[in-house]
Image 1: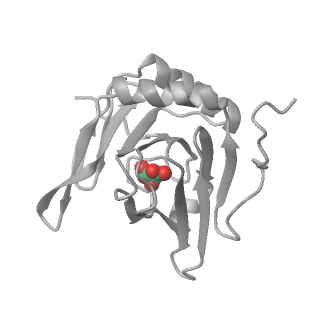
Image 2: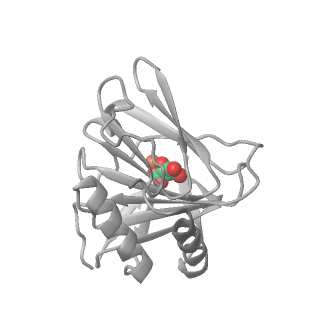
Length: 206
Ligand SMILES: O=C(O)CCC(=O)C(=O)O
Ligand SMILES: [Fe+2]
């Protein structure tokens, strides 16, 4: 029985070369995704992200939070983040993503976009603390948004609509050869929550 009328083939590679992107579509029932959306909105320690760009301290409108196996420190955008201990819902979602991907993760970066006007610019997730070529499991809740990939040399572009309760997986050499972004859009007026489950390699204990 197909509970979620999921038409997506999770084994299909959306990238033509140099990496693997699998879109599983929604991996839970719509009501369950609604419940997680609400719970995450209320229980996550959302904070405006701080980045140091060309020596300037920038605060994003988008909110972020970082959770993981303790003790963890993680550096990106020239700032060091401290992981918070897993919440019960994050542990449930981590398990679900691990079951669907056959991968394991030790941390999760969460992003809250209040509306379509907030997005994320072209980047790759290849920070030095991240496991090289490690899989990244990306769960989305709330507003459906377009997510795009651009090949670093050929400039080829691929876009996927990320649905409420859906899972996207980036693995293999994706981060080495492709950039990704969440383009801003005036068409979306409601919030979206994204969770990226990751593997951090360098555990720094202080
Ligand atoms: O919001 C998304 O779908 C992706 C976020 C992202 O690329 C990141 O956190 O590195
Ligand atoms: Fe990313």
